[in-house]
Length: 486
Ligand code: ADP
Image (cartoon, helix red, strand yellow):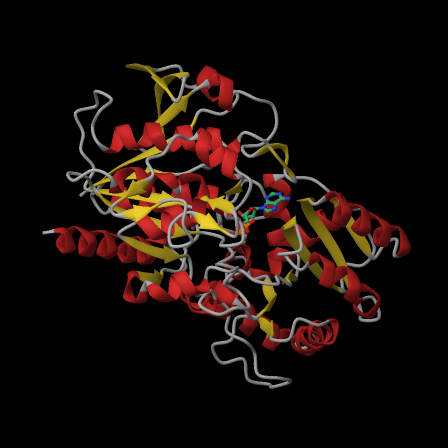
């Protein structure tokens, strides 16, 4: 099958979160299954210099001069087409704004143009002599692509994947008009609540949901949750109306990059039969975070974007109670400046107990996952989440709010039981400091008994989170769309 995969982030070229990991690993797994998959990504600052193989294509799109470059997905033969438009993409900072919490004001134009050029690739109009059978769009940045494709009779099938429903790509009506889209597509008036309009704004996310041939999200649990008012971000009715056209496929993880027995980024490698060596990573982590002297105490780690979604506000509220337990905490994360500042304040209140590194640092992320005893993930909601799966692979126990993909991929221990059975972590169900503390107390009960602790670690390490399972799910979904067409 020929698949065009459109995304706004791609590991290792550009990453702000799990989407970049998925965009790397899912195509790689589909390629291993024999599919001809190709990726399209905006050519952000620095990418054109690093990948100067220009394709013989130049055009004016939406008034901007555009070219195409070709790179390859790291370690594979998968082509990555980079949409080059320096006026829109060659800027300092992140893919969506100079800083994470300040989006560029012309993002509708930027990702509108990205979708227009992706449409041309999907329709074999850029001189590649290649026709995709399926176009796989990811999150709001690619939302206009299903809409643009829907206006053609002869076109590939289109899947739209929601990685996070809360980020919808909302813009003013004036931005909608500047995009110069047709008034109606496939019999639907665009500026209407049944199409793009969302409470007086234009929603790229809605465009993807309404015009794709199928929609999915990144875990089975989240696919159920977003049908409710609590998690649906105002789109629950629309998603419910899709019926069987909306499903969940749980993400996997990169089991080569995240492998404690072969990880050059950690202090000491180890496996399920050499778990005693894990402590050397704890010592290195404590040293790096300057918490020396507490190696016997339970060490909690956090690797996360600092946002309310990730429950960092709950963590801050619960910290006075958490600090009454015999635990220490290291936090690696960046994002919301208010939360970052609040964490640095509490760090000062608990010297030698809490250490915060407000940074994005791949190597440090591996060390935290390997060196902490437990990984705390208090997300308010979680479409899938990856770090709980990394943690299990490293014998680091996830302690998480029981939502979305977290509840799908962690098996909770029975309260204060001496039998670990198949459990792999600790879940708390109420989003309150008390519930979080209760979970940590249950965790500590197991930590106090080395045999039980080892059972819990090994049980998580034995889980199979490889991408091949998810890739088969996607491959079946693409196939069902193609069969639907004929
Ligand atoms: P989300 O996509 O919502 O941020 P996920 O758990 O799906 O959450 O993915 C987060 C990814 O980003 C993981 O690969 C995680 O290791 C990485 N990550 C998050 N924060 C940091 C950080 N401060 N430094 C390095 N890696 C980070």
